[in-house]
Image 1: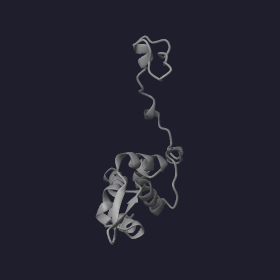
Image 2 (image 1 turned 90 degrees about the horizontal axis):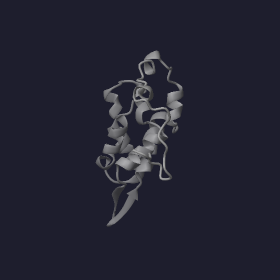
Image 3 (image 1 turned 135 degrees about the vertical axis):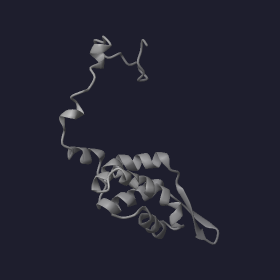
Length: 134
């Protein structure tokens, strides 16, 4: 498995700047390696939805090109590069979840809150999408 530093070096070569400017993004994608030390860690962030979340969490990167010129590198480009380098393509979260085998514990102990709270129907949503009457 590639190390976040390797991805950062690849980003710097592709887009300019220094690897340190890209490292936080690549470390975020690989953070789940702390939970799983195998390919399963990639199911957490290595998909189109993870790329979208990275775009929310990180700012675009401004790199020096020399002679006082700079370039703005979109986080999306860096995030897509990371996923493609690891998987060869960009799957969706649904692609990963389709491979998950349902287990009884995943739903067996779900609390029947509507019954416990005496709610017959879900509350109505107003035009803005907020619950009314409560």
